[in-house]
Length: 316
Image (cartoon, rainbow, N blue to C red; front, side, top):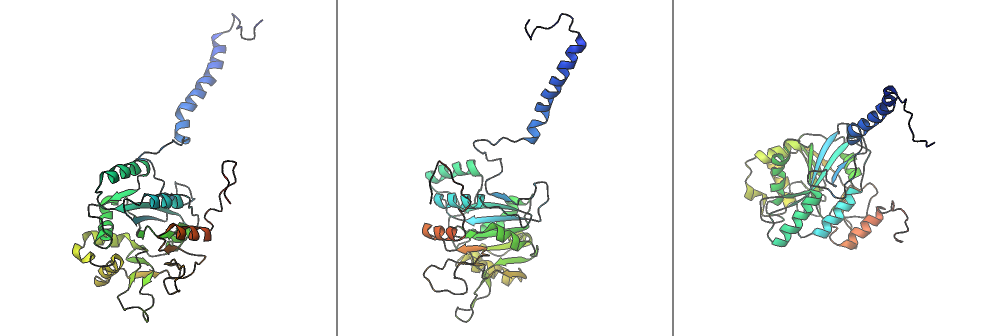
């Protein structure tokens, strides 16, 4: 007799005992599985979290101690540099403080068909680019345009801090996050104070080096509403003009100098107050304009030490 032959006397109650558990199991898959298990798609879209939205290792349900936006000032044609930075920052995690960090690349209007097509692809893939309505420049108001425009872009979810950084700066996010944990959330100006050696450098009212500086959200809102003229933000190094804007208006009273943890790459150049050898608790290294400088810096901080052995590659 077959094991799958049912008796003619198989009653409706027996069927109920079999079908009810199966029905319950089916409902479990339909109702519970989608809300608790997320399958990773092969590609992302512009509405999904970007690869450069970095969070601490704490649970997503915990409210962060603070929110930080990092705007990296760069140029549209620097595709290779953006790829490097995305890779570096997407691999960094931090557990010493509860923070939410978003990183965006900042340019002005695109001027060629090639840039428009290639940058559109990047936005579709990563959604980490902000294009300002300006003509591309370094020291003619681009940074001011970014900082003063942030409230209009992110006013519905304000940050506690906004950072301007260069694309030749290597930021160690864990140390940056930890260093900001106990800093003031109002009227705050953070970076490497320049000039750092008043005896050997031409005297100038203090400002934070353009390698990377942080402003509290209230200062960003003030910049957006200020009547400080647009032409007064150009005509010289942008970091000096940011400092000048704050100094003339008696803003940024809570200032934090991060020497010697923020500094320029030394190489063969003589050491000074803003350029010296690597330090173990580095927050930022600047002037990494060539790939060999990036290689030396990443090697020093053992960035690739977590690479696991595999039969698919051989790297020594």
